[in-house]
Amino acid sequence: MKTLFVILQFGILGTLCGWVVSFLANLAGAAGVLLGSLGRLSDLSGFRKALAVIVCALFQAYVFLAWVAFVVSYTPFVTSTKPVVHWLAWIVSFYVAMVPVISAIGQSTREERNDPQLKRSVPHVALGISGMLDTIGFFVFAFLPKTMLYGWAWVPFVREASGTIV
Image 1 (cartoon, one colour):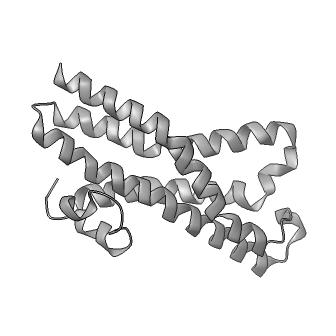
Image 2: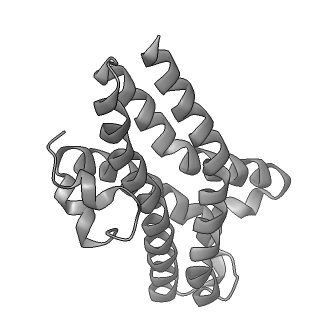
Image 3: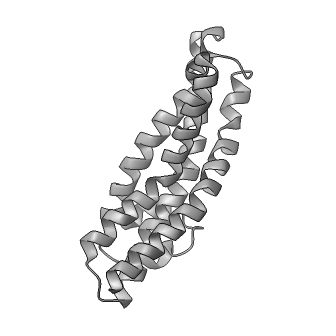
């Protein structure tokens, strides 16, 4: 029963905060979009195109990874105080950590239906890169919690969780 409560708690947390994190990541990626002069990838030169996508992806990934760091550090905090099935809680926390990326890619895909050339825009391409970094970051943070301290020490629960081995 307590495992179900933890899963429900993670589900509510992920749903409520996922769209906020997705919105913040899109704002953070605006630097790359501005670098690309708000243009389509086909309108940019090779170096400027690559630079715009990389800058946008890195800023988006930083915000997404802040959310991942919070979820990864919050999971042991919640599961240590309650007798729950730990592997099930970690599966749910992986899903919750991926909700903002899934939400952002879903929104980008819906917008792409209305404008077929949107898939060639800077933020759309950068979302794929950010999503991969987000997925890799979850496993790095889960198995090497001290790595969260290098860029996300300001995130709640990170300092407490970085001392424990998951």
